[in-house]
Image (cartoon, rainbow, N blue to C red; front, side, top):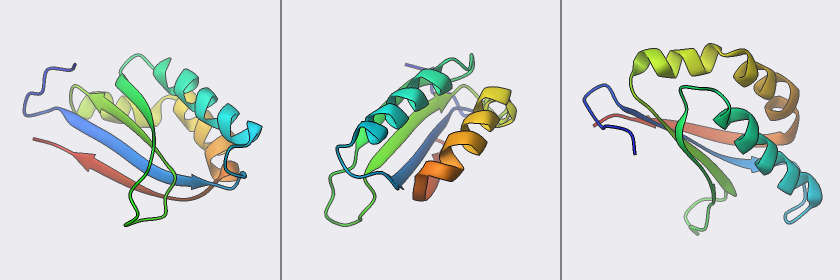
Length: 103
């Protein structure tokens, strides 16, 4: 677990894919997302979740932690993140909501 100092950021995004639920394309997207995004050195405690609340209709969540704003910015600007967003996210995600937290 990342040291949760005052600079710590929990980054989360909930989303719904364009792919059919339970499909091979869905599985590949989730696995590729985890593999690619966790290869960025500043990403900590990356998790993939299946959203189960009846209070919204998003299907999945990616959650990760950053030590500070500098690491979060480095992640956003990292070529692997930008490539994943441009080549996969924009094409395969139907809709999403991004939420970031600090203590």
